[in-house]
Image (cartoon, rainbow, N blue to C red; front, side, top):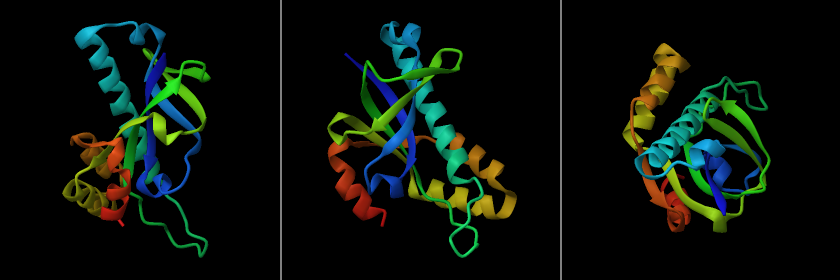
Length: 158
């Protein structure tokens, strides 16, 4: 049986093989829930991953020339990790799954910000700081894409 987990990453990172990543999943107790409670635990795990991705993309980063790098569009990958994947507690009810390599055949879906929401967040980061941008992204829903749509998605977001 697999563990559905959520990988916080970027569209740029999806263009290559994802290696040595951490993913958010409900803990063993959360995975034993059924029905709406289970769906709620999975949704919360995805929201935690989305917040981690927002924090990472708006963290100050420099290019090789010393200039500040532009934030990269965040992506959340819903992934079915092997049950034997190493895990560590993250916060009550959730854990971090460590994945050496992400096998694309095990990806269930991708979740991205709407273009207008992402553009607004980038502008907010410039005008009011990363915290305002992260709050803006946290207040919006993510779009759902099937795993088979990755190639088209990467082409559309180039």
